[in-house]
Image (cartoon, rainbow, N blue to C red):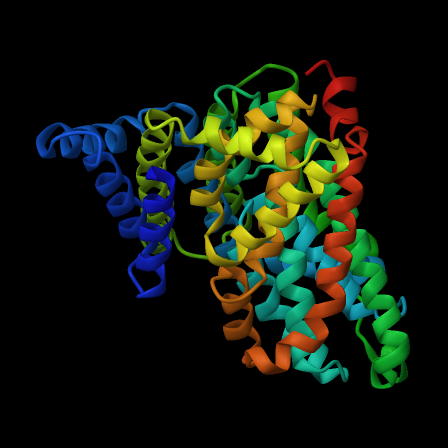
Length: 432
């Protein structure tokens, strides 16, 4: 009955409004108290929370966050928007395509869906409104496209998955995320084109009025920012440095580019940039700490093995089992943030999919793509509410334009799940 206690307690704490970190740690401690006396149980929980952060790989998370924050404050988002306008603004639904393209590019620099939603949306939503695009549609497009940054490296959540899986290569995960991330972007673009043709007569009418910057000038402006992606991924693939060392290099590069090359913000702004990064990192790492303690408790109580056996007995067909796992992760993503979801459910589900021959790298991409959809879904979707605030729209206004975008993301999820080569081709081609 331990797993029932754990689920009921955790779900009940979330329902009454207890913060996620406190709900995770409390449910883990109470569950362990069923098996151990008070003192060893509480000491064990504290120890597991502390040792859960004792990982060199986790150092990459605050470093990549700091790099993305520096680049954002230094005008990288504006330059990428200008490049997107130069590339696709004249196409049908052009400004929607610009938004998606800019989010793809910015995600490859920052690795943060929330940052992309706020930074790109802050530029694009007012611009699209001036050209006849309704705010709910532009906000929905912006927030869904921003999740591609969690698949396209550098991605903090893929680092977390590598930790939770017990040693999957971060470099292989980074490479595996490129094709699925681009597929999500292409699917969203198709929805944008169809939507613009059916509903945005004003956009098509005013398309000639959109100011399109020169392509080569925009490319030259954005090139130093895009070069960061090439240097970081090139260094990882070539074995020059690890993902954590790459994160440190990205911070150094961002500092030089922002404060020595572009010089758009004063050096004293670094204090506020660092403070914002510390706040974000502390939330993420505290979630990691509590989730690692909960994962240990589940392993101590043999819950992953029991749940794995239950899933395998429920569905013996490989495709049915994968669809069932996808449905479970989509449900989890609606009520749980991405980091704790990865840390809690990876030890449970990874042994199940490995028994049917699924590669851990492929499963990591499938899990993250599932949870990306959850970030755009009420009641807990972080990106959803940031997108609502950025676009100044209500949830009621946002749901209708979100539905076809949801369907596009789910369609890509099914394709990526059933065709592992889409994820594994690139890392295997490069020897990972």
